[in-house]
Image 1 (cartoon, rainbow, N blue to C red):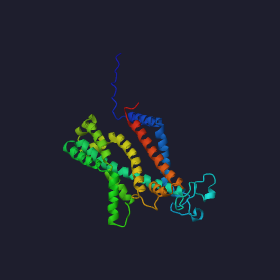
Image 2: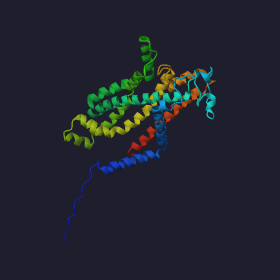
Image 3: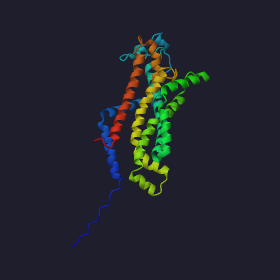
Length: 314
């Protein structure tokens, strides 16, 4: 008796099982990167400290403890904090609690890094996607504009803008919002080039041709079909740029042109500590360690995401 064999149904390239498998593979690769996992733990702790700084800080960041300060910075006292008025990490040069200022400084540094990277990713993704998808004279013009922005030294430009603002008003430095906007508006070229390189390849793939054949417009093809396949390099670049922006903001504040006292940021805490470095080393060491640990954690996260998102990695 003859039996009828049913032809197998070919699986679609976007099968649910394939998507689930890719997610499992991603998390497996990421967990194997021990430094990236440690970086995530450190970054999560820093974010929690920044979010709940007001609730967990033992003192107001601008409170001056005249009772225990008496003209000299108090050293750290890890064993018996009652001897120094509850200042576990000591006080700064004017008697403010160093631990509380570190907590609030984390909020400023992380806010600058995150919001700046959001701005640069939005600008760079749009310009890079348009340049890579259309090519030709559109690509040429946008890439020449990108080259111009890449040639601008960011830190000297921020110093020049600060001098202009100080000369035209009573302000001595740029505000938080202006710093974020300027850094974000000048940092997008690296993201734009990554997205453009991805789109130059993706626009020739079969699924892009199929999307055009069924009548999708350019905007839908760019943002619905091509951009999700270019997310990996954007995520890695954005992660690394957060660390770069934190260092840049700290440098600007250290030079006296960034976040101004009495608002606490890790950069201006370092600037204020340099005058009393010999007698109050802790006022410089702890903010420097916060910057070092945070930047290292974010860089390790970027390395882990790069390895986990790379399909060629085994």
